[in-house]
Image (cartoon, rainbow, N blue to C red; front, side, top):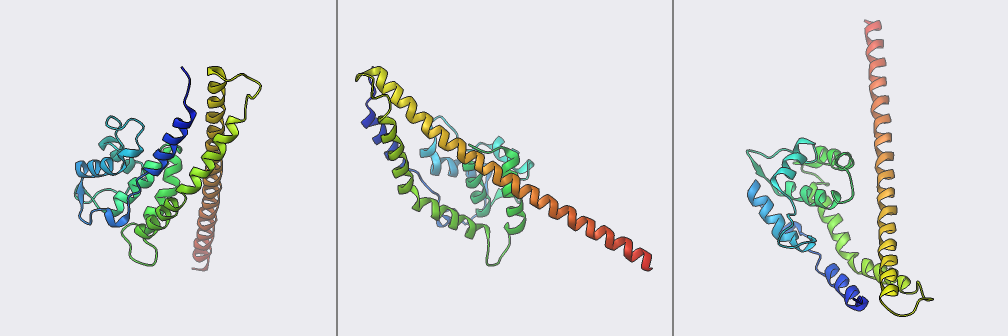
Length: 221
């Protein structure tokens, strides 16, 4: 069975074109119960599922675990608001490549500082900035993938045309994409580790300064 590489790459490009970003203005302004949240997100992001119709985007158990692990602020009287939905979208994209701990390191401080707050920076503003930037980058992603695909087609040129050559070129394409994901995942983890280490040092310094100050105050008294 030979692989129709042209059909394959066309299918990939079509899939990228169907990526559905949830715009802030499309998120209900009313608070939702858990069933309504899962139904809404499943409906809006179902095109990103590998097996559409069977894969669930987010489940009740997942959302409850996110709240227990401080990735998500607790609901108010079992209802979730617009900011909850935005944070869940971030979690959905993060959870495919990052650990719960890494996600908590990023979303925990952000939720603590901006959730439910008014001001120049809000959860909605952050969401709008990030999602807007990603929507604009879809065409760049397509070009990068096409370039990687063309490079993979230049491999194994010493083999005759046929199923073996097509498979090995496909394998090369998958390896190239996987390595790209691996390097970016490694970069993300290093960035998170650096941020976490810096934050912990700052906390220790602040705690140390406070303790020293407390001792000095006691001596002065």
